[in-house]
Image (cartoon, rainbow, N blue to C red; front, side, top):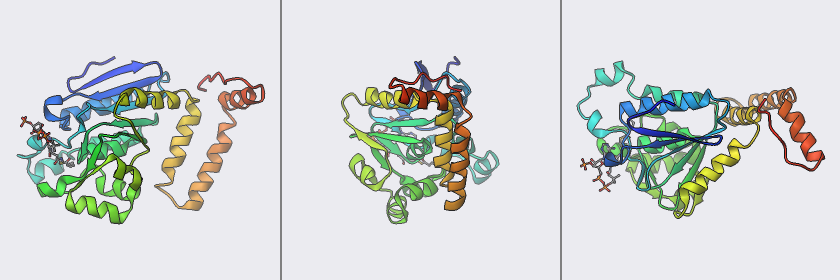
Amino acid sequence: MTTYEHILVTREDRVGVITLNRPKALNALNNALMLEVVAAAQELDADRGIGAILVTGSEKAFAAGADIKEMQAQSYQDVYLSDWFGPWDSLAQVRTPLVAAVSGYALGGGCELAMLCDVLLASETAKFGQPEITLGVIPGIGGSQRLTRAIGKAKAMDLVLTGRTIGAEEADRSGLVSRVLPAEGFLEAAKAVATTIAGMSLPATYAAKEAVNRAFETTLSEGVRFERRTFHATFATDDRTEGMTAFVEKRAPEWRHG
Ligand code: CO8
C-alpha cells in the first residue's frame, strides 16, 4: 500500500482506515493532504476486499478546516484556474461507503469533508461549524449545499452566516450526524460501525448507497423507479440468493461479494 505524508492508511480486515495526520495544524486540509485522501480513498475503493472506508482525525480535531495559511496568499486567478479544492468532488464518486468518525473540531472544510461521507459518527466532543464567513469567504467544498440538505435552510443559514460552532448534541438534534458515541472508546466504536457495514454483501452495499444518494439528485417518482429497478437487479447476485437462503435455513449468510 502507498505511503503518504499527511495521512495514515491502514486496513483492518474489510475496513480501510484513513487518518488525517497533520496534528500541529489540527489536520488543516492543505492541497497535498486533499490529494492524498482522494488517492487513498480511490485505491481502497478499487479493492473488492474493502467494504467500508473510515475517515478520521485525532481526538482534538477531525479537521479545523482548509489550510488558511496556504490560502492566504492566493489570488482569484490562482484559485479559479487551479479549481482550488475541486478534487474533493472525487470523493462523491467513491462507491464504498465512507464513514466519518469525528472527534473534536470539524470546522469549515473539516465539516464539509465529514458531510462528504455517507455515515457521520460524532464523538460527544465533536464541534461542527462553517466559520468561513469570519475569514471573509464562504464554504467552498459543498458546505452551503450539503449542510442545507442535511439540516434545512433555517439552521444552515444560522451556521453559515454567524460562523458559530455547534456541539454533538445540537448536531444530532439537527440531523447533521448519524449517531453520537461516547468519547471514551470512540474510535473503536466507530470502527465497529464500519465493520458492520463492511460485513454486508458488497454489491448490495454499493446498490444501497447509490439508491440513497439518488434521493438528492432526482424527483421522488424517478428516485422510487430507480430504487425498484436496482432492487430487481439485486436478484441477479449470488449474495441475494445466499442471503435469503441463509435466512430460511436459520444460519448466517456467507457472502461471496458477488
Ligand atoms: N488552517 C491553518 N492552520 C490552522 C487551521 C487552519 N484552518 N486551524 C488551526 N491551525 C493551526 C493554528 O494556526 C496553530 O498553528 P501554530 O501553532 O503554528 O500557530 C495550530 O493549528 C493550533 O491551532 P490553535 O492554536 O488556534 O488551537 P486552539 O485550540 O487555540 O483553537 C480552533 C482551535 C478553534 C479550531 C482554531 O485553530 C481555529 O479557529 N481554526 C480555524 C478554523 C477555521 O476558520 N476553519 C475554516 C477554514 S476556511 C475553510 O475551511 C474554507 C473551505 C473551503 C475552501 C474552498 C476553496 C475553494
